[in-house]
Image 1 (cartoon, one colour):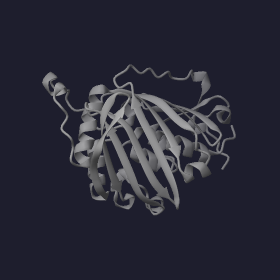
Image 2 (cartoon, rainbow, N blue to C red):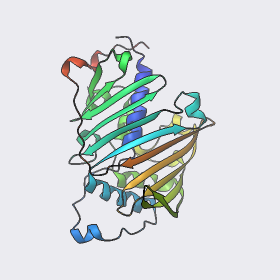
Image 3 (cartoon, helix red, strand yellow):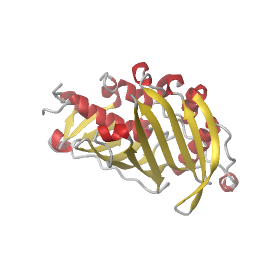
Image 4 (spheres, rainbow, N blue to C red):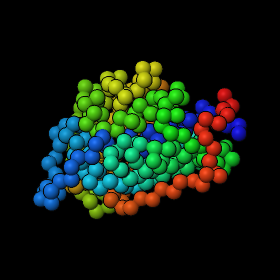
Length: 275
């Protein structure tokens, strides 16, 4: 099987990191009482409070559908303008990737990708590039691949509280800017500006990448129940603008992810790169 490993891993890493980075995680908190569920959500005054609010709400809902689109000069130059990523995820005992189930499809750079995550195993289908098969690998196997090390660090640090703490010194502004009607739901809109060079730990970028990224403007649109409805990111990378817009729906709806038939899988360890 002759596939360019660099492009395959890059597409899989971007798609997985993009979808999971929006999912607040860590250990799921105890379910709130009925009275607490019905109480109005207090409007957060900081990123830490907002992350905690979304974490609790997502842990209660456990599942959702998401869609992501890309824009800007960087997306246009890399052939990602007009492409979209969509999928569904369900959390298990925690929101860590190993305990999640997810199915996601995306089309970018002339490649169609079908990525699935079940019981800690990733299944990566790249259409004709993988001859209709799925590459399979555990997180432990991917951790041994230097091309995936940074992505796995971010994927395995989905604790919203830890991420908020890591970003605390990097947030140069945080503001509630009003409300917006999203499909009949009045959502609170929060914006923040982040200096990526100051983000600590696994939530941050590696030094070489951070040096190419300018300030990031992040916008969260959160419903009255604390669940995120939209999350938008605008950043400058190597002098080109990149936008990523995510939308969430179907919170709490059942999610079923089918594992590909064994005959349609190829171990990642047998993956023969072309460079």
